[in-house]
Length: 206
Image 1 (cartoon, rainbow, N blue to C red):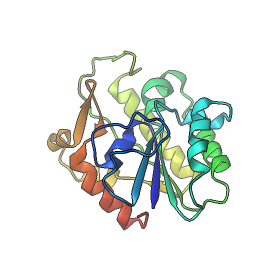
Image 2: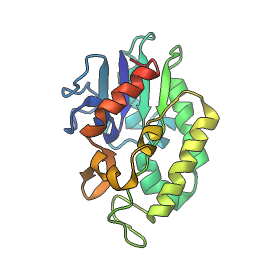
Image 3: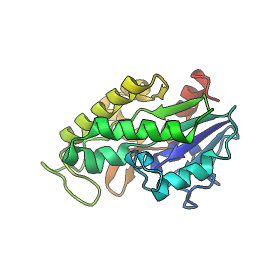
Image 4: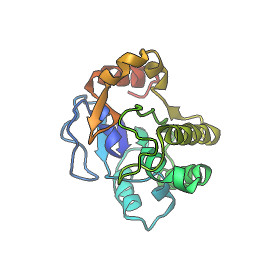
C-alpha cells in the first residue's frame, strides 16, 4: 500500500479528475486498491516546518495511522514555487523546512518519498502574470521549480519523479496530458494516470 499525501496534485494518483474535498481523509475516488490519496488543501511544503501549523496537524493525523511497513509519498511544493519563491527567493530554506517536517512526522518509517515537481505549461502567461494564483513570469516560476527540485535531490535520494516520462512527450502534444485548472495548466490529467501507476510499480512503491 502507498499513501500519497499532498495538495491538489494528488489527483493524478487517484485516477479521477475530481478532487476529494474531505480534507485529510482518504479520497473516495481512488481507482487502485493499492494507492490511497489524501488531499490536505492548499498546503505549502514550507508549512511542514512548523508544528503548530494546522496543515502540519492535519498531515500528522494521517501519518500517525499509517503502518511503518507502508510506503508514503508527499506531493507538496508546487504552490510554494508558483506563489512564494519567486517573490521571497528562499527555496533552500523552504526545502530544508519541508525535509525537517517530514523527518519529524515519520520517525520509524523507512519508505518515505518526496515528489519531484513537474513543470507547468507556458500558457496564459503575460509578461508578468500576477494574480491570486501566481507571482512572476513563466521563466521565473520554472527556474524556481528546478531550484526546488535540485534541493530535494541534495537532501534525499528518495525522490519520485515522472519528469523523465514527460520529457518523452513532444512539446506540441504535452497539452493533451494537462488539465485546464482555472486557466492554469499545472495539473496532469487522467491520460497520465497509467504512466504514473507504471512508474510507481517500476520503483517498487506499489
